[in-house]
Image (cartoon, rainbow, N blue to C red; front, top):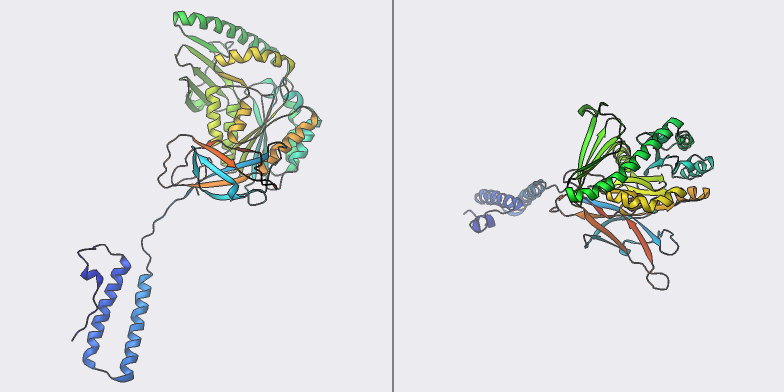
Length: 487
């Protein structure tokens, strides 16, 4: 008589056709066991020999079942994407960074909705090394008049020498010798503090403007002022005749002078403004750019040729860090007098680059010349009509990227201001939250807000200031972006 062990997969096949692989495997082994036992039945062994034989057979079958059950099933691979951001927390009254907070003190809101923080670290724990780009605006009538002073350069050099060994510095000088399109990398990223000091020592030579260049620039600025006055008058006429107006920044060039050919162009970017205007930025091989802005109605077109502005400097710095130091925390320190003419569309695009690439923008702003202070109330409305932000863009970029905007006046302010920026870069909390698998890249900015609640020794809520980047763009699936790194 053959005795068989009933198999669940057989008796319930009509009800469950998709049993797990291991269940079917066990059932198959059970059928083998029943067949083996039926083969032993006619032998009718007695006593110890039969018992030992059955034990050995069952042991062998059990091992076979165990090994088979451990066969690897199909692997499901899940890519986890994490959005990282750094947060600086300071006492509101004293402005001193706070370093003793814990995970439970933080809350991250993504478009107003709370996110579960899955990554947390603070100063003194693991942090990425800095890749710090210092951009010096060497205009002689701006920050250059201070940057050519040896005592100021020494104060900055001394502070940079205090950086931890793993942090690196690169230095860029722009608007050199009075030319708007000229700039030079005084040093690439380096940990050599002597090389940094040598680079800063070269700055005075890039500030002074040769007389012939100064005369040409004065004539150009005079002509531009006349064109702006003419533009305002024509704007009034435009409302009646609905004509068109084109303002070219370099009308002294003759029509026969060659323009940029496709071979000279590296990149052309078209930016749509919030108010319906369109800006086309054409970047050439030499790094300079031509910018053309047309207002919403299409009646006013402004062209700027052969410039290297804040937008260009930020783009170059972000690309350099992404290419050369992808595992470092990118940061920029912009040293100027605050005057940085930039189209509103270009400023918004620059802000997007900083947020997307997770670059912390900071500024050291020197005093304006007395003449500029007098002309600023007049120049701002005119520049605004032309769609240009004349002053204050550096502070805005710092706020949006979570950086610091520091004003410097005295000689000692340069060292202390730079120390404040660097200290705030290294005293940050690193936070991160995971994105769900179904969250797709929609191309839109996701607003971020970091809230901190902490009590003092008396149990009262502390008054705190939190600085962090104000948003992020979703990283693509299966790849890593520097804006919000997917790991």
